[in-house]
Image (cartoon, rainbow, N blue to C red; front, top):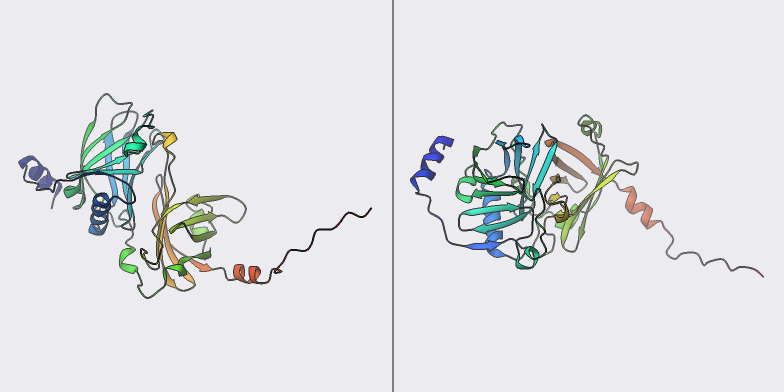
Length: 307
């Protein structure tokens, strides 16, 4: 359906929606269902190029899925070098809201609301068809701005689909490990230093550690569920977090991928400024387990000071 057709449909008022209102929490079923539905559509996620009021100007907005378990919105305005990210999600009827503050009853009571505190509101029905129809606002603006823009369908801009690559026969715990990039120079061309990606499971969720091998590293701590009852098999998708204390003025790093074998992963890297790049291949570093295995079982007794 064309963008013009969507505009006519919205103006005609024939969008039929279900009535529901909820805010986003890991255990909030209405929000989880809406997020899963949008991410499974394969059309909602992606780059939306919009023009916002000064000082933002031309902005690349991204709707980013974490498998089907979560969504965030993040944007970059190249002219001013401005980042804005909205990592909280709320649902009201046919509207999904991406917020820089926690909308839960407890979270809202301590949300200071300092600038920029961006908010992006969008029609769920339209978003499922690759159209961002809604509004944007932040605390620096006098009023909210209407947005109606179609997803960028340039093949180089469409996010990689990992859901179709899931191998249900591979145990989800196989994802854990330290993997060495086969061609780290590919990322260095983008100005990024990364030679090692370590995947782990902590508190029933995936986490990632990106390392250049010389001490520079980044932690991505918001990953897919990883328990026997709730897991994504051999897939991984992990975001960096955004502290509510920066009021949305931050960027997001993200990795997603799948296992091509028990000892190799294929993955893509995302950054708010750079967009998606990849795929990259990384091999399991088997020396880690060997080193741990060869460590002495007990530490040597401390030396006693002689009189």
